[in-house]
Length: 598
Image (tube, rainbow, N blue to C red; front, side, top):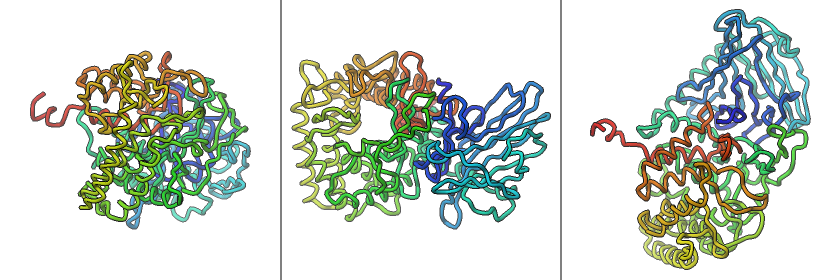
């Protein structure tokens, strides 16, 4: 477990924040999850001048924390050598109000003395413009205002303003509250409002979790992963970010620093699928709404691999020079050049993300002819580009190739459209898409199986072993008992496993040899092992991955093969998806656990 990425996430579908083990808010973008980081200490070096919000207890010797069970509310307890103890409760309000979800761009921090004489210093130091501006607070009677070029935020509190504005130590003799939000007056009683917000937010999460269809085993891990995925959805548009952070390197000093606060068609499909497995289909419904806007914005039908969570916003990649980077390992990137790449698996992921809409009888607005016709346009591009050279799902910035995985996703798009057409009783369209799928599959099989290597390979030319081949049975392209798939799983395990965890690929890429394992690939391997009948090995690998989670139950993108530390952006939706998928596959059933007496 990494001490450097030992962060907990809170949020509400509009904003999100990361809290370190001592209760410091070290990351929070404003006024939405892909915005300017108000708190950027995570990327600001060891002891930054600003970009954080913390509570210092004089003489602190101990800090513990926990999520309030089944919620996105985090509680941090600080203690000092004299026995003084206080608790910090952090959350972003989220609850039902007037038949809508109330989810303001607001953070609530409540600080309670629990024992002894708690002498504290509160340091509220927001940054603007990616660390370039350190605004001075403008004081009011019960608030402070911080103004930047584009927006202002207001901290409203029942503490003496001078203590916070001047960072003066004082004795915390009673519970106190600080609410950070839009620059608007707080109209009601702060104490009563925050108490109500906290109770309603707790109740919201309890209600949401209550209706998840969770496995018998590993329930707490799955619930935490599900909540983490929910925090990565920007509900105003339905877009889903790949992670809440930018520029945490995939490996130390690797310059593999990417901005993941955007919506990849591929990652979002996996997120939707995992939440659907748990019965939480609302995210899918919102995401389909997002996709219709994205598709309408591309009159040529050519889809980019990644979009802003607000479609139409450009993702041009640039640097933020005022921030030195995670542990000083820059650069800090804003935006993502992958938006300019050709990645042809995206068409299949769009169709697959919408497939359940046509088959799930619980949904009030099922997939209809209009949605099917929209998806047919996507399917037409999938068929057209099935064998066009592209950057592949690993987004290689070097040469393009015809990638097996991209072509298989084109096949999947056509195969799913054929099934949708049958449900809608459109036999001519069903025949058309079945013919398209058959033709694509035949051509893929002509090059993807390498008899000499006794394995499927990743590309038509210079084919190598890569972890995406583990998904061929999961996607339905081959059967799990197909000898070619079994041989591929075994070959991938031999070639790509490093100290128990899986690499994406073994060869060099644009930045040299990868140094860390890609966490989702290890989950894919565990699933594939189970598919080919090696369940004990699959469960062993899954437990090993659970052991890599940080204290808050989160996983980042990568695991260091030597130190086993976490690296890469966090929480990584891919990794949390892998946890859910694999737990659902490997858990004993409730029936096995109880009624069969096992």
